[in-house]
Image 1: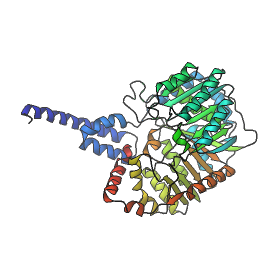
Image 2: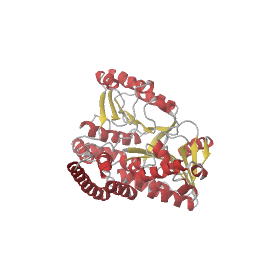
Image 3: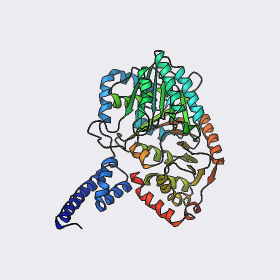
Image 4: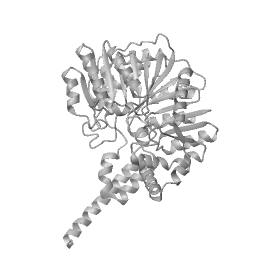
Length: 472
């Protein structure tokens, strides 16, 4: 039994927790976040402060502090070379394309770099093709290799790429390896030591650098990039691990000016992690036999607005005849839900492929509750039955295809560092269309019954998961 003194102490602790909870609730609604996220945090902090305060300390922040200042420092170090670099890329601006005017303007305003011409884009389907192509590109490197992954495994695939980097470092080629410390939390130090001992420059992308982001694990660097000599770049959904040999995923190889834009993304992240800038090429190398237009759009929590959400809402809103999307996680914000509904209601062929079996249970539960929002307004949903579907692809009309790292959930749209390649080329669009047609054949159409036929406890858990989705 608690005596009166103990009860007094408990009462004081609860009172202090409630006061702190109220203050943090005010902080939560003042931060730039979705309305449902603000409401969820506000209610949780006031009603359950003792439980929610430590969670908010770790997950509650929406802005990644210090990154913008670091990039400003890097820009000052580079000096006039930055203007030369941007001027070089702007001289390769692609000609405006009918039906793409809005997206072209958006990409330019988000990144300060337009769609670039004279690229050759290769569609890489699934892990085996992607890794073979990456290794071949690394082996061809003459000056440097830049590698960045969110998840890195110490398995046959991870060691294969590591050994390719070590071989190039031994031959005198500069090699740089950047990994996310949260995504690769299980990566043993011994894996990295092998590279360090052979001259590979290695760093983790830190979410808690200094005091400004203390205790934060929200701001993960979800990009998967590789650049060789500034002339070849890779971007897409594959991480570095054996499971991606069986996952359904999509990556791109881009030879041409857009590789320089991928390189710029790496340099910014590398400078944040190390306060150093690798010596890289700034000259533009045009593809000899291709003229595909590509824009690279990098987004993240250091942006002045929710650029990732803006990008995808705009792509959806500008669809006129077709909008096909694949995403392993589907917990969209309100703006995206409305944009998808509006597209379907105005007669656009809106189709979304989701995995039949997800790898994150709470996210899968939440996604079930969006079936009504989509199906009742003409959006067609599919569940991919062959392995786990991990690709992030968007196809808009016959004008542009986007492939990158963005999932349709709160974390990608607001909290992660992401990268998307937009390709405006009719031949490439047809390739993506053919690829997705195969995926539709390997999927089953979703009906409302897929949710309502589930047991009541499942449906209750799904609704609770949806309420918590802004916090995921």
